[in-house]
Image (cartoon, one colour):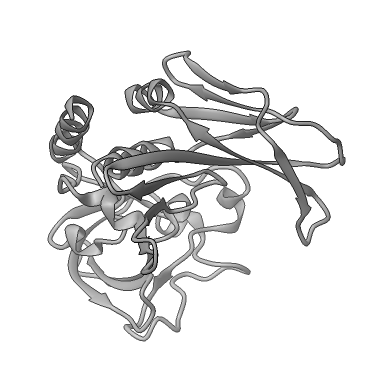
Length: 262
């Protein structure tokens, strides 16, 4: 019970932290000033994705061979005048206006934080239940057993199996490799230099369309390990000898914090 109270307090603290990505609640951007941030990596040569000149989202703004050229939009600031849902559950249309009254439209994808191009002036204050939007619940009508599963983020997700007052927690991690090897074990590294070692965890090997090998390990989490994950954010995972860097660690932590309260 004490653990749940602590985690609930952590959830409440989200409302006091300024954030930029509104997740499944794009309406949090309404009336906000947003600034287009710099692109990184190969995206800097390809341009920005999602900017249009028409409300039907057909005409790409300042189009290059791919999308909007970077120099046409980088650093500009807009006010979000309107947020409109589309037929797709993941997509919304943002109406943007700059200080010269130029209006652009942005196709917002709630499942793609990696390609989200804005910082929010003053930030977004997340509601306490923000990350609970990313947890799916299923109940077996015969046994009454409930399973709560977080969204798969960068190959990592958590799930909780609840049977009456008893509950068990599990974690799944994935890493890509160019060679096929046999083995077992997984490691999770955190920002505070703590780690979770699962040397006996079974590893499943599959392949993707590119021909790479996908190494997947699923294991139960002890109460001690859950507390380690609550205290910090994941930076990297290793499956056998293959590593994967985790960039959306804040989202994973937020979902786990909510999962514990279920």
